[in-house]
Length: 270
Image (cartoon, rainbow, N blue to C red; front, top):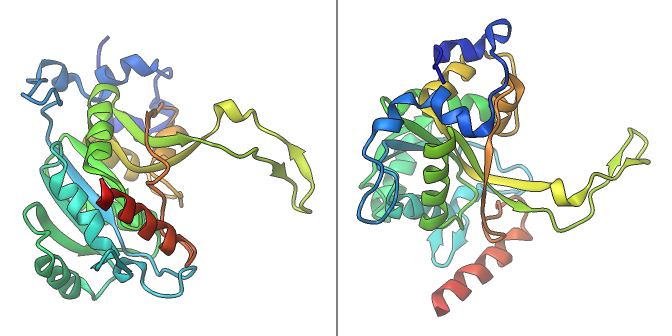
C-alpha cells in the first residue's frame, strides 16, 4: 500500500481511512520493510530510544516512589537496569522532577546505570508533557519506547517483546488480560454496564511507537491523556497489544511496596 506523510496523522480532516492493523507498518514504517530484520538473537534490528517518565509527584505513595528502597536499591534503579539490559534499546532518556537532574544523574552513576543513559531532562506539569520532553530529547531514532518509571519490575525480555512488536505493527503496548469483572457506574455510583471481560486488558508500559508518528501526534496538543496509546486511538490508528506479565505493576500506593519486594525475592531464588 502507498504511504502518506506522517504529518497528516495530526490533521483530523486529512486522516485517511482507518488501516487494518497488519498495514500499520506500511503506513508508519515503510523504510523498516527493507531494513536488516534479523540478528543472531532473532530480534528486529531497529533504532529504539526509551523514555523513562519518572517526574510524578508520588501523591498517593506519600513519598518519592523513585527512591523507595527495593531489594537494597532505589526503586528507579531496577527500571534503569532493565533497559540497560534490553537488547533492542540503544539509548535511554530519563525524565525527572524539575530541578533534580543532578541528583538523578548521581543516583544512576552510583548504581552503574549509565551505559545507555543519554540525557536526564526535567518533566512538565502533566504526564503527557513529561513524555513529550523525553521524546524531544531522544533525537533521531526509528522507535520510541515510553515507560512509566514506577513500573520497576519490567524485565528486559518484556521490553524486547514490546519493541519487536512495534517494529512489526508500528504501535504496541504490553498488556495483560483483566482478571476481575469490571463494572461501569454513573455519577451516583450505580452500575450501568458490565463490559465483556474477555475483551478487556490492563495496559502496561513500555508502549512503543514509530518515533515520527508519535511526535507528529504529540504536535497536535490540546489533550491530557493518561497513557500514550490514546494519542493513536484518538487519531483512529490501532495499537497492537503485546502480552505482558502481572508482575509488571506500577508502584502507586504503600501496599505495592511489599508486593514488589516479594517479586524481587522470588526472582532472586531462581
